[in-house]
Structure formats: C-alpha cells, structure tokens
Image (spheres, rainbow, N blue to C red):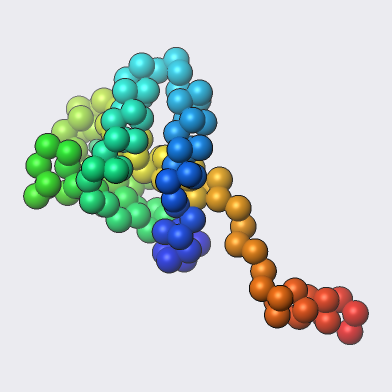
Length: 120
Ligand SMILES: [Zn+2]
C-alpha cells in the first residue's frame, strides 16, 4: 500500500475502532493492555510518522528522542528488556486502523470504464 493512502486511511475513528478491537484481543495480558492505553493517549500527544510498515514516533518523556518501530521490534529500553512497550502497541493500532478503513470508493469514470470493459 502506498504511503499516502495509508496515512489517509488512518483517522481518529479508525484508530478508536482498532483500539476497541485490540482491547478485546489482549484482555488477558495486563502489560499489553497498559501499553495499548498508553499508545492511544500518546498517538494524540506525540508526533509520529507511519508508512504502513514502519512507525517513527517521539518518546513520551523526551520529545528529542524518537523510536523506530518495525514488525520486528522497537528501539526503546522496554522492548530491549523484553517487555511490551507502547510504541509497538501504537504501531499495531495504526496497522489495524488501516485494515479497518473501507476501500476507497470508485469515481464515476472508473465505474464507467469497468462497465465498458464488461460489455465490450
Ligand atoms: Zn518501544
């Protein structure tokens, strides 16, 4: 998925829906629940960029520190120590939010082209 389209798909409503689903998924894991709740708060408070794969996000305690979060992990101390961190929870939330977004609707021209192709 292209970077621009991922960013367009991630909005407050999708993140809220993703958060709701994620809370259910990890209700047995208190440490992840805590990380998720912190992620939801800090996605509002901290600056971040997400390209659909890699999340770059400012530390909540020091805005001059930025963490790079990939599917493999995170550069923060908590993750290095093997603990759940809110940065990874935030990345997961954004991935889920993008998945929950409806497919972009087609323009009339695209629909007409599809119809033309069907009956040509
Ligand atoms: Zn982290």
